[in-house]
Amino acid sequence: MSAVATDPPSAGRTLTAFVTAPFTRRARAELSYLVVVAPIGIAVPVGALAFLMIMGFLAPGPAKPENVSFAGVAVGAVVLLVLATRLARRLGSFHRRLTARLLGERVEEPPSFRPGRGVLGRLDPRLRDGAGWRAVAYLLLRVPVAVLGLYALEYWVTGLANLSYPLWWGLFRNHPPGVHLSPVPFLTPLRTRPFHITTYPGTLLVCAAGAASLLVAPWVSRAVVLADRWLTRNLLGPGRLTQRVRDLEQTRAQAVDDSAALLRRLERDLHDGAQARLAALAMNLGLAKEKLGDDGPELAQIRELVEAAHQGAKDALGELRDLARGIHPAILDTGLPDALAGLALGSAIPVEVTTDVPDRPTPAIETIAYFCAAELLANAVKHSHAKTITIHLAEPNGWLLLTVADDGIGGADPARGTGLSGLTHRVGTVDGHMDIASPPGGPTRVSIRLPPHA
Image (cartoon, rainbow, N blue to C red):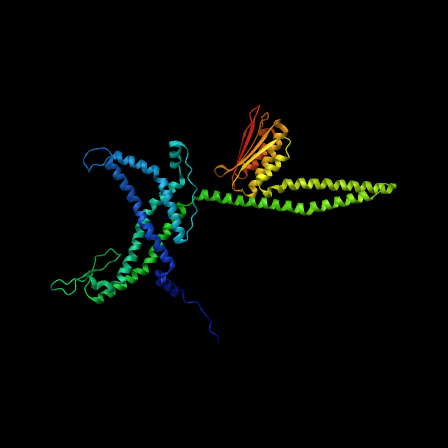
């Protein structure tokens, strides 16, 4: 009868995990993390208090050094208030990188700070910087966690010291007159009255206590690190609402890109499939029409039928080409600048195209920009009575900027049904913006700002 392999009892696994915990990679990573962040957590509030005290002493006031100027403290508090979010953001970024490297906890960065112009323009956004104030709250709430972290580090230091106590105990013995062995203090993380070891067998008890301290140390460290990770996730990240918006933006971008890819594939299928067959059919019908003569009424009727079929095939081929071009222009495969140049060549009014786009946008954004330019160009040709049209494509400040201008009569209004309202909706699907400047008498200038990625 064969023996059935069974898992070791859960109590045995628990004991094994408890004994081997100080030697695991996780314990080393958490210990390294506490060694770095615990002193920083204490240094931040101490540094802030020291700064306020220095400002209080340096401020003009009574000559006695023991007098602290409350005006100086108030000025220091205002300075800290202004710089708090900026410094907290930098420390928060350092903690995120450290958490990702040592603990494997990757927290996404919050939205970047965007200062305004001027003194008030820079000050007001800092005071309303939600991500910065969450980072400040993180630094304040980390103070008790940092104290617990130092206590956890004491377990490690005391455990190592006590474990090696029998090795170095004899090096620090003194031999005063009449005393053979002087007592050596025993370090302990427990706040009890210190006791002394006067004999070598007593050092073995200290060694056992050090081993127990090392066994407990990783679990204390883990509890402190778990609290710190919770604070990092909830205070140093983008926030729940911002994260939800970011997730929705990513989902929308994926849907837009998938839709653009589907349209490109549909255009290729129409071009390579239905268009090719219709073209072949039209050619065959054309050849049949040429071979048919005019002799006899029956041949004439057949020739008329073939000619009608030939014309129908050519009309269907033209409509299919227009449909495929409306789904996805094939010229976009070579890039948006070439596609805009192709639009300019087909315009009845001279068009000047200038482009300055170092990085190519995603296909979905290129498609939106192309159809917007095509619609604006068609509107200018039909309604503006312009002599020249300019199309400018640039990428300032990380946005794709498309500008279409003409020297026509102006008066373009989205409410008149010229297609501008549809462009507004098309641009808005990717959080773009469209500005129209078209006073009566002209000129007309339409600027479309699109993100480089949907």
